[in-house]
Structure formats: structure tokens, C-alpha cells
Image (cartoon, rainbow, N blue to C red; front, side, top):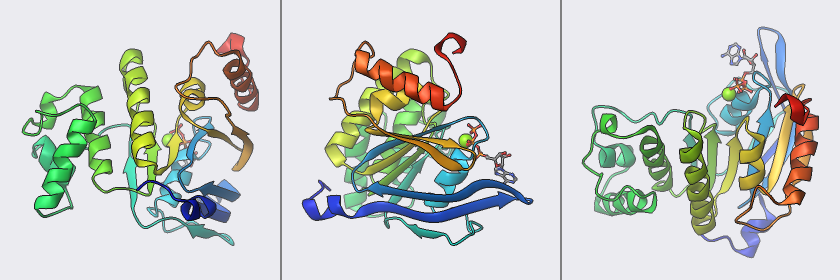
Length: 244
Ligand SMILES: Nc1ncnc2c1ncn2[C@@H]1O[C@H](COP(=O)(O)OP(=O)(O)OP(=O)(O)O)[C@@H](O)[C@H]1O
Ligand SMILES: [Mg+2]
């Protein structure tokens, strides 16, 4: 799944005039967006700004998007949510393998669990996993599908600060190895700038800011240039550092 030049020149996601209203209230107001194949993009915005609505539309989970909308997305798309959505009555490996079949899939499932640091936990029940482990299992489940596009809606939102930092490292590592296009929804400015190479701010139903984060990885919070990006993003969100 390593990207080749041809892949990099064609967008993984292409939206034109994407519009979504609920009961006459417009949440997404003619969004134009292209995400190049293999790009790691984060989407920020206030609660209720429409981040999840946009992600659901890109995932093809929303059939009521309207407008002169055009939506192009790859075939193999995986979605990860804030809670792991593991089925409690299936063992961890069976959860990872859900919807796949064959011996090859089982081997891939084991491999994916090893990649997220859960080797040996194949036969555990989801209830025996910690929150962070459950999210890692959810990542493994998305990996076995070898997604061209990984959509994640606040996947670390329910985790404690330390686990979250570990998960950042893991997600970035997995991205480097498999290179899917990523659209990560988060309300955490630091998470966005430490992980993504491009950060979008959703505001008033539109992409209000589209910022390229041009810093090498792994990134350090103390990098003064990251501080500048942080300020610009907070300003776009209407927040000053003092009020964080
Ligand atoms: N199925 C629905 N029916 C009616 N309104 C909806 C529906 N889904 C979303 N909305 C509305 O659309 C707006 C955007 O919701 P959305 O869940 O996309 O926000 P969000 O940016 O993901 O917020 P959060 O950060 O709190 O998750 C909200 O005002 C919400 O109430
Ligand atoms: Mg949401």
C-alpha cells in the first residue's frame, strides 16, 4: 500500500459543493475539499460545527447530503469512532476479523493486533481491555481492511492524557507504514498540529482555514513554529490562549 507517484497526484477525497441540512438548518454549506492520496489531514471545529456530519458524508454513511454535491472517495474506507464499538460477545481477534473471512484474513488480523501492541490478547473479551487497548483493537480492525482512507472521529477523545500521547505516536507510526489518506476529526488543537500535515477548521458550514503544517516528525510541543500554528488555529476558532 505504499504510495506511488501516480497515487499521489490523484485526490483520495474530492468534494464539490457538499451541503447538508437538518430540518431546514444548514450545517454544511457547499464544502469544496480535496485530500490528496496519502495525506494526513485533521479537521478542527467547535462542537456542533458539523465535523461528524462531514466525516459521515465522506464515509458514505449519509445518503441525504445534497446540493450540487459531488463526492469522490476510495473504495476501501475504514472508520474509527470515539468508542471502540467492539462487540462485547466476540473475542478481540474475532472483532478485528468481523466482515472478513479466510485463513489469510486471520493471519492479517493477528499481524494487525501485533502492530498495535496487542499480541497475546487475541482471545481476550473486549470487556477485559482498558479504554486505550480497546481503541488499539479498533485501529487493528481498521487496518486489516487495508484502507486507502482512514476516517477517525475523535478516536482518542475518551482517553486519559498519557494514553492519548501514546496513541498519537502509534497512529502516526501506522500511517507512516501503511500510508492511507487520513481525515482525523478532533477538537484538540495540539493533537491536530502534532499529528497532521494539514489542518482544516470548519466554521459556519465552510472550511474557514486550511493550514499546511510544514514541520518534520516526530514533532515536539516545544517547537516554536508549532506555537505559531497553534495561535493561528486558536484564532480561527475564536479562542485566545488565555481562555484555553
Ligand atoms: N441526525 C441529525 N438530526 C438532526 N440534527 C443533526 C443530526 N446530526 C447532526 N445534527 C446537527 O448538526 C450539527 C452538527 O453536528 P455534528 O455532530 O456534525 O457536530 P460536531 O462538529 O461533530 O460536534 P462535536 O464536536 O460535539 O462532536 C449539530 O447542530 C447537530 O445537532
Ligand atoms: Mg462530532
